Image 1 (tube, rainbow, N blue to C red):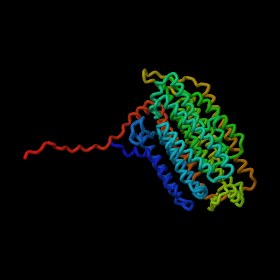
Image 2 (image 1 turned 45 degrees about the horizontal axis):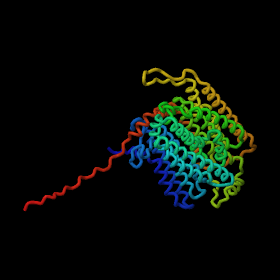
Image 3 (image 1 turned 30 degrees about the vertical axis):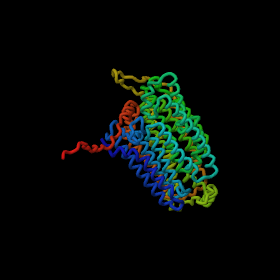
Length: 560
């Protein structure tokens, strides 16, 4: 038996940015162009690899749509297992595409500040990709720390007083969350004797009494880390300040980092606390549901109360995170399908808006003043010079139309993906999923819509209405009530990433049926934890090379 070459692709999203980041680290300040193109080539490789993983997981190449890579050739649960399925593959593709847009945006301006921007960017991608692929809790902690360590430097990128204040808060909160993560891991290992996710899920039904209580405490402490990253109320107070202070390409990647927390909650809770978990089944679901609803209320109130575009984008991200957490807590598979579609669309929308904010701000800042403010704000010798490019034809029309598209997506209005996602969620809540039990074929499931379902629908509608009001207020103030507007000079490298992200959103709308079908298969897979447990724990390690037989020595003396 040998390892099929396609399984090596599972390791590429971790190894490629690690090697490229290490290669970029020794390059000094004068190698901007080389560093950019090496980093760009790395991300193009990640895009191609993610597309291949999507194909192999959904094309029948791997059993049950899962590819497993045993690091170090140690069988689970003793070694570290990396697992690629439909859900992790689509998240890897989203990461690569968003990283491509963000990096392209930095070519003329942000990528030239500081020596190690591209190195940190690659390590950030490595940490995010590893968190999507790993099937080991301690390895998840390692990738989380790699991701966070890189983000600390990136949040400070192009430092000024506002960024320093925001980054200190961001670092302190994440260090505290990391401590909770470690304490939670210790309790989980003490009660189950393993940190492999599949093995933990297999041992949870056997826990009882004090061991079960300690396990729940450990899971709660670990969940606080993910919920802090997901900006769940009241743990998400740091997010609007950080988004508003970070440079636009970094803020766009922070949007994805917020979704990493929601992804881990979705993956772990459906695996460990499934219906097969015995006394622990459904643990924490109500907390996710009602905490997600409270997060929607908090995000909507914040969005309505602020007039700063960066903070508005931060509160929009909080609303999307709250919606995802409530969907996970609601515990209905077809609702999770619409929730994953919403995750992808909202990430593209908020990221595009954060990139667009910088270009819109130039309308209200004269060119002569902008360079002076930039030099003063950065207070470094290599402060970015405003890119000199040709004026894009009808630049004001582009900015206004791009803003309108972002507003429609964030608010969930037709015809863009935000509306399709919310319509899918409403349809799932209003048509409770009925399933047949394997034992006797009896159809089971809720026959009436619970009160929580009606409340969730109302909050989603209300948050969309508030987003419309907030975005319209900002748009009117920017494009209509600003007096004489001077169209800014925009470089192609700044315009194309926004067009690219909005084009992806349009593609999601056109291919909504195919994408929903893919995500439905992904949702069905993660709702079958027994299949995950069996596939991971039964994956065999490769046999060593066959040893040649030892030579025989004849000790009998020969006859003369």
